[in-house]
Length: 562
Image 1: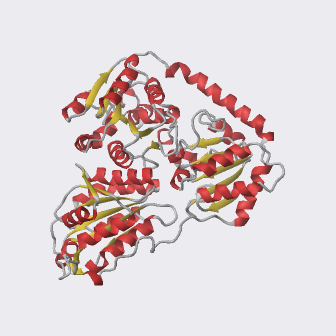
Image 2 (image 1 turned 30 degrees about the horizontal axis):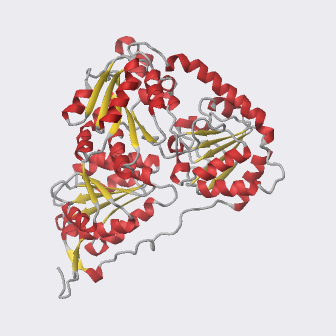
Image 3 (image 1 turned 135 degrees about the horizontal axis):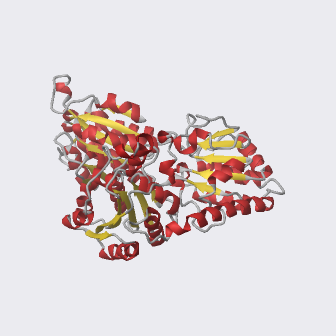
């Protein structure tokens, strides 16, 4: 409704959502339509916010997660009530464990029908509260934008994560006077979250580093979250410290950098006198902290106080932004006449020898001409195929475990994996988010055949929105990570119960949906097929048949199978 001067006098809840998203800098929502939420679409059209509609709400939530990781801005998914919201729960849970900021907006039955059994009515907030940083119901149309801004603020409080809002249908569809609606001003409802850590702790860490003879540092997910690449790089190069990277921290140092190490981590963590863990919890990936030498001085830096010292005692804990903390520590070391860098030359050489030894041991498998194709050969070909502009996405179990040991992104922010929840099915939605946010980048995604099957129908969405990428399926017709565990625990005769898949020609699936596809059965065909996929300019799937009887070392070492 407009006044005599052409200005709006009232505004609907859906349009208030869109205005609040716009103020936050959101330029796209990932969604699957439903009658409860369509007024948000109308608002997005007015505010110039793109709407990417998918085929499953899990995809929408994962795409919002992927968007946040690539851009550094919170992502947004909009889903309808009931099954629409429950379908998105896995994406919310994955973002929660991965510390990815996003807002999921769910529909809800009308407040006027509360507890009457309205269509798709469920207690969404009660269900999602434990796996989010903030979950609430919007009680009045005047509060819509206010609560959207509140949800984003909480999403970025400390270690980031997902927030959830449900908006009842009558609240969303109703209109209120413009002047009565609280619409927080962009940039005026959130303080800086760049905490610098305790100054005394910064000085203490600087002293520990300068005095250390055999230090090592693990650069984890929060190094990318806080965009700490430059400060981390300056620190390790200036002080001559060997660096290992995991999760989103991969690519902080480029392959070939003398301070970049990957395969000698066990040797380093067993022999270091100082170990600095940046932005990575002591969870199962770290053996709950037990893989670190008991003789080493251990320092943990994290955005969350709750993470520091959890599962393992630390000698020094610093709560703060990795970028601020690492740059402050480096500056503090400049007060020392000798920062110890030259004295660490022998330690660096020792680790490089361990690294080269591991590489030499693996080399024959990376170039194996075996048929069926050895997974190491596949991931080696992918690593060789990547360019400076390639963003790599891993979605799978055993085959992606292989890739984690071989594939090395060439720049920060060029690696995406599910994170510690181990969610399969993130690949296609992560591709979607990445191609939307960075259309200038080449996207290369490796799927297990089981993982691709979970969300693969949204390959059609990539075709529909013209989002070309190079997809590779490591196809062993099995959920092979689980298959290994069953064989190890129960014997070969029970090793294929509930984990064996059909022999699917996924290349035909790709071409059926308007993309590019090829079948590859010989190792020499991998590289040429990847190059043809790149040249096609289409969403693609190269279906590579790999040996189902070969398992990644990481699969065989999982504690659940011991």
